[in-house]
Length: 165
Length: 165
DNA sequence: CATCAATCGTTGCCAGTGCAACTAATAAGG
DNA sequence: CCTTATTAGTTGCACTGGCAACGATTGATG
Image (cartoon, rainbow over all chains, first blue to last red; front, side):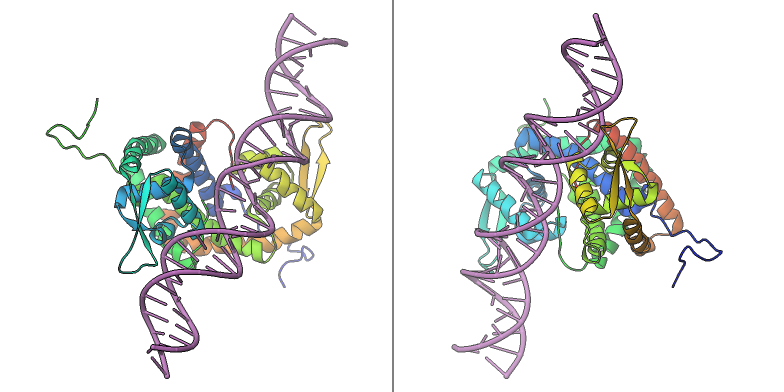
């Protein structure tokens, strides 16, 4: 129906300008930060991205289920399941079946896991500080609010649980 | 040297609050948008994320090398190489050796590739509109500037070319 | 020129991950 | 209760994608 590059109007088809296309830019920025951060916990602690996320979640919340972690981090449940298995084998976390609902397992860091977390957390925060050092406190505050707003909206756009890492 | 949870100060080890930890939040947001966008070009056009990025780049720039696309999108060169092969087999792009430097190949969309791009671009832009509909024009402008600033800085933090997708 | 280094792109290999099917447990409905 | 639907988590399978080694070409050095 629309323009067919035939009539006199010569209406150019719209182009996506990647440098201004937000999904693309967000992915590039996320990749850059993710890769840089991964160097820290991969090289020094042998943690994959999903494993780090599990450790980070349990470090913050002490006890969570795998499902919580997956939903919170937009990861596939199988991804979390494997990360949990590997962390358990390494003795960094423990699983305890929830007696009120024996389908789910409550996860928590072991003392060794906590030790690693305590070593990692300052480095992660230091990395974040370096990353945002180009922003003023006000800019950082603004960015946080905008990201939050977009994330809430994006979650509503994709109701089903999906993931990556 | 620092706190050892021993003295009278009882200094709690620092914790990473994921809801405020920018790398995590950026990844969650990028995953959400990426997954939602991928539904469009995967289901309707059978394009993977790397393939879509190649098509999008060539759609915008007409001619680029694989290396350009990889560096621009923070993708591994092998990822781009395979996406290019698959797109070529499907007749969506053509490769032309650069006679000035026969190591590199100039990539461009075929008419069929351009047709797909012309069909995809409006949908991608419509998705972006929906995504940012929760932001005012000023907020969007602000966000763009902050993302740009952060991306430039993050690229300098990770000098070596790395990738994902 | 001859050699060595660097760069573009490809490919074999393997770790990682999404998907779908599965088990186990719980909830809902009759 | 018994049946059916739903949910938490696991796993086989296939595919994706990163890594590193490679071939081909170009550039840099002497």
